[in-house]
Length: 341
Image 1 (spheres, rainbow, N blue to C red):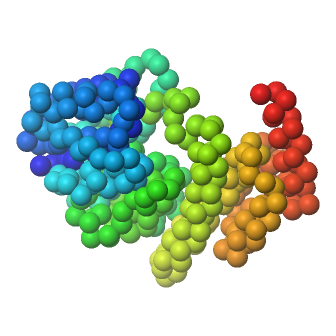
Image 2 (cartoon, rainbow, N blue to C red; image 1 turned 90 degrees about the vertical axis):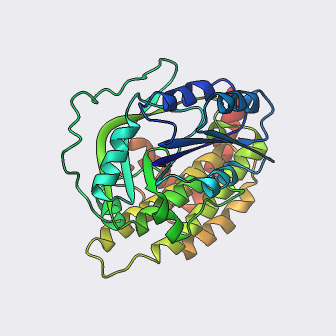
């Protein structure tokens, strides 16, 4: 078994077929890979669709579980995975035709812990074919480094659908998705990268990220929206512990820590942006900021730079870094936001 693909699903009847069909269009035999669909107590036809695929394809497995969030769903799939490599894919996304075998060959030939690749955002128009697969040289030697050097030199995405992971590697780290909180993929991604000994990136165009107004991170219900805010705060504190594990003797430790600090402060920045549109009392903000000050995640002195720049970011950071401005600014914004909404 070369690859296990784990797909957590909650109410994805509209998109699951395109996702699974793209995985079946990879010129791989059923014995080479498995597709593990984890139904997280969907209320629509997601489970029925998944079970129909499982009856038709021996390499498709379905786990039906009580709703416990995407982190728990991914862990459930990971616990039964048998592939040499693991790929966590969202059910509203899909992959380009015949790209997975190339990724697996690169992983095997170079004994990689993690291989990252190109992801492309899509809305409605399908893009089933890789734009550079015909010109891609699979025999070219990729630049291999450890994860600390990778982070130091590249801005990495928070999400988990743009890389493959060696199963023995992730098992040996003991790292799992946190459960019951958002930002679980951002935390796991950086934790894994920091422990990887052999990482590489390929420019092969592979993944399709579907932009949906109904996605979990765009959910504007007050309960969900506020939970994301508090979970961003949790991620900032988790990153403080992660930064503390970076060996200062590593040649790229300083650059890696700098980028991780930027990512940590990004959680605080986007938390503040969400606070502007939330109904969380502004009286709670000082306590939050005090907590961030203790872990050097506030003021946002390490946020602006190579990864985040521009007039919009700069203006908001100017306000957020000045405590006397925050409450009146948020109150004024909320009044305007309520009026125009």
